Each structure stands twice: as C-alpha cells, then as structure tokens.
Length: 384
Image 1 (spheres, one colour):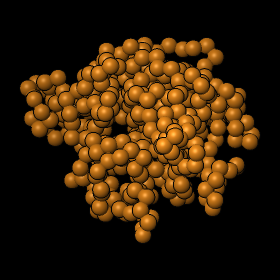
Image 2 (cartoon, one colour; image 1 turned 45 degrees about the horizontal axis):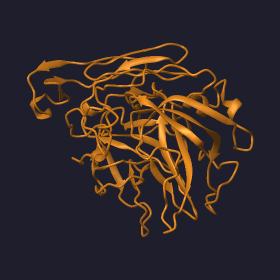
Image 3 (cartoon, one colour; image 1 turned 180 degrees about the horizontal axis):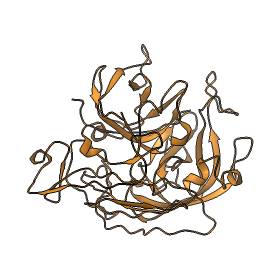
C-alpha cells in the first residue's frame, strides 16, 4: 500500500509569500506589499514583483502558527496577520495565480491572472461562503497532530489507533485522489489544513472504496468527488497512526523511526463541505530542516502545506532524476535528500542539475521516504 504526499514549485520570489516555520528565515508576522501602477502582465514589473489588478506588487509575507484551535479569513491584493495565544488568526494574502482542474465555477471561485509559478488552486478573491467559526466539541488538525497538545491523548490510543473525532473548519489543500489501489480495497484521500497553517496544521483524510464489476476502483462515496482546494470542511472519522514495515510493506506498529503518518479514516457521511474559504499560506522551511536521513525534523510537517526554500535564497538543485534506478517509480530528489513524487500526474521530467528556487506542497511519508508531490505541471513551472 502507498501513502502519498504532494507539492508545488515556485521559481521567483514573487510566487513565494508564506508563513515561516520555526528555524526558518523569520518568525512572527509581517506584511511587505509594494504597489506601482500600470501593468498588464508580470513582465511589465520589476524583478521580484508580479502583476495583479493592474498594479505591480511585491510578495506578501504573513502567517500564524495555529494552537489548539484556529480560524482565518483572507482576500487578495493585500496582506496582514495577527494571532493570539489560542491560535486564532486572521490574514489576507496577495493572490495572483490561476485556478486549475475544476477549482472555479460551481463553487464560486474567481481565478486571478496567471503567474510563472504559483498556487494553481488559488481560491481567488471569492466570493467565499464559509466565514469560519467553531463547533463545540470539535477538534482541529493541530489537536490530532501535536503530541504535546492538550487534546492529543484524547484521540490517540497506545496501539496506534484512535477514537472517533470531528474536525471542523479545515480547508482542503488538495483535490481528492486515489492513494492506493492494492488488492480489492481502493483507498481515496485528500489533505486538509487548519486555516492558520504552521507546524502540525495539516492532516490526511482517507476513505475506502472497492473495485467495480470491471475490476476498476470506483468512488468511495464519502469524500466528495469534486472536492477542490479552498473547500471548507466538517470531517468525522477515526484517528490512526499509519506506517508500513520496511521489509514486508505491511501495516505495522510501533512505527519505525519517524515514519508515522496521522490519518483520519472517515465514517459514512463523514465529509461535509461547509463552503469555500481562502487557502492557508504555506509554511516556509529550509531544505536543511526536512528530508530523508537522520537529524531532520519531519513529524511537525506531516500533511502540512510547506514551502521548501533555502534561507539564503539560493537555488535548489535536482541531485537525482531517478533514485530508484534501474527501477522507476516517479521519484526525483532535490538537494540530495528532499524527495519528490508523482501522486498527481504531470509531464515535467526534471533532469539532474535543474534548479528551483522554492517548492511548495503537502508533505508526508511514503515507502521509506518523506516526500513532496506536485499536483500538476503548473506546480512545477520550469527549471531555469
């Protein structure tokens, strides 16, 4: 069985406004938005700027790290941030990328102008139909992920299983995808985030379907087939720590090393779309903080929307175009230890030596390595 993750790549600083993780280039909240009139496309602007709403704008940097609860509202064209000790946050972030693969239309999303590399599932300026709020007795993704938090022990059992939990107000950061098609059972999933982002803010939700009469995986009937990033959700299911034995590739407990992935296995009727909302800002991590090998701090970023970027803003390079050679499983590697995979289909085929400024996406563990995975060629842009 496979448990999979995903990613997005930015090739200019203008595409990289984000929340900075502990150990990154900065902490706290800031907004640095510069505006100059008169642009139609990004190339009309200075280096490090992008064109939005007819003006050249600098990238915004805003963020909050969620605590045991969090809520957020956002709009395009400006950036502000605030937080309190409880983890509640309100932010607005600059938005200029186009929507992709159904992320506009019936859900009421408007796409911004395209950029060279940015969030392909941008929720746009709205109209947004979910205004946040709390549900008494519900949990956040942070509650289910942070072992030092006050609620973690309420939903996690010593054997790796967990109790029934309702998670309210999380935002989808990926579309629905088929995660595993091994055997008769077909595992579907999607990744969600607390609105404020930050460490422990992400979560993988899964549901089981089965093969139809033709032997093809059919829908699970629980996760909406038309789920798109920006959908706000109420989710109910059972918490589980999932991992595979590296020798047999069968589920095991306790999990070896740092390979545990927290999942919420949804019950029937356990996924309800509440409306649409702004996407959380990605959390910035230096490639030296995460990856395959010893000494990396991966667990806080399980399922989190990350932006991998060197703190000195130098380019990251593809150091292996096929680390599984002579076999091929669609993996490639940045900076010798940050793995990238093909959970979502794309045509870009990076070669050793190609360079990227930043890589943004949901992070998780699969078959022996922590990985990020692009959702489309739009995620990857093009290597300079």
